[in-house]
Length: 387
Image 1 (cartoon, rainbow, N blue to C red):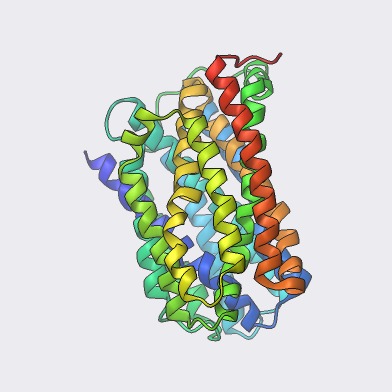
Image 2 (image 1 turned 45 degrees about the vertical axis):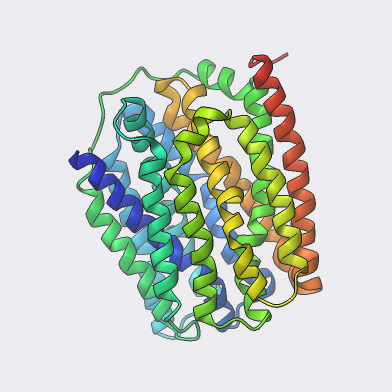
């Protein structure tokens, strides 16, 4: 189906953006002399805008039945933002004050891009076309290829990293024109329906566990590259290490449907958050950087498994006319978790290094696991209403 091919290409390109941004933007900022509070604020901008952008775009998507139109707006805005970063850096304006606005623009428009793509993919899965995991794995592949190729870029260069990100956003914008522009306008969700969904006991537990899990995961997003470089890894090893993790994620995505058919999504979330506790402890305390490379397949369980399990729960739990809204609220919740983590982990890392930062992340993941266990028990009993 042409729509499925276009959606896969969209995932490939849009996640290639993150394959450069997540591993290499933090070292690029550090090379500009941006550290401490300013570093934390710039890195927290992406998840901070994730609290605002996805719910806004999700409500509009549900109310008007828009899909491709909104994707194109989001892609264009994100491109303008990072093109501004590249232009400022190239002109010698790579300071915190100069970069803040274009980074905010990029973050506001980039955060709904994945959510809107997920809505299209989940709708296709509901109609029996292609399982979500078989589409979403192309995003992981895009991240993987970009992370490997970007290892050849020089973080100390003023323009290489931002130009690569801007170029990938431009490619993503072009692909978005091949996606369906809109779907038949569904029944408009009422405030009472939205409130009933979001205040139900199982949804509250689901969102709480996702929030704390993402607080912990923010340590990985923000500090892992710095931790690797501090252990003596080169930029190429840095890219390869991220790529190994995403390779394992691709394998998991390919088998996600079979796994979901055997184990309930809430149980998978509890397992994933439990494995995250172990992963953060090992990252923080094993010596050298080669063991960190060996540990990277755990990324499939601590990131890929929670993501597909969470979206499976959202798809089954939310009525069709609330899918965009529910997905937007979920993305906003984990974005709030990322903001919370990123405003704190960099200071913990500066004070005590990887052992202290990832040790703290393990404690937070343990809290998420405990909530997820309660969530799994409630859903097993079938009690989804507030009580």
